[in-house]
Structures are given as C-alpha cells and as structure tokens.
Image (tube, rainbow, N blue to C red; front, side, top):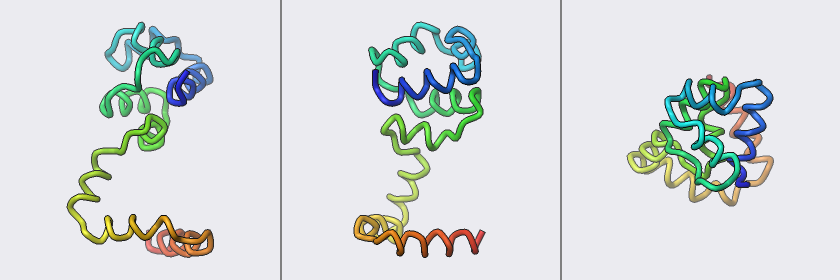
Length: 110
C-alpha cells in the first residue's frame, strides 16, 4: 500500500465514509478508490484529490503532497516568480532557527 492510499483509507475510515459513498460524492468509481487504497493504483489527479479532500474535510495541499504532487498554483508561483525559485534553492540550507524566524515573520504579516 502506498503512503497516499494508506492515508486515504485511514481518513475515510475515521470519517466513517464507505468507499462507495466517497466515490459517489467525488464522482468516480468506487473500485478506483479501492485500488488507490490498496496500492494497485497510483494516486489520482490533482482535481480528484482536491474533491476527495473537500469531502473528507481535509487540507487539499497536504493531501496533494502526500501523493507526491505539487499543487498547480505552487508550480505557477515557482515558474512565474524568480524570487520564489531563488528562495527554494536556498531553503535547503536553512537552519531550524532560520525557519522559525521565517515562520514568525509570516505569522506577523498575516
């Protein structure tokens, strides 16, 4: 079972939603849900993950990242803004203290 499939199964079970009900609410076949949860199928498309997240009341970005997918608006932001791509290149070398400082700055500005 892949990480996304395992997480999906856990979330769905916690919310007490059957595979059939989730599939119905998302607009896909329930066997597809089963295959994802059992690792027989790769995680679905971004749009489908976003629909699943809405139904389950979960953060779509977190679910996309669990599926090893980069949200499309992140991709757009990275490709359209040189400062973002420069920051991401440097981010790998930041210390935990520097990350804390960045979080504080962001929290204060919002």
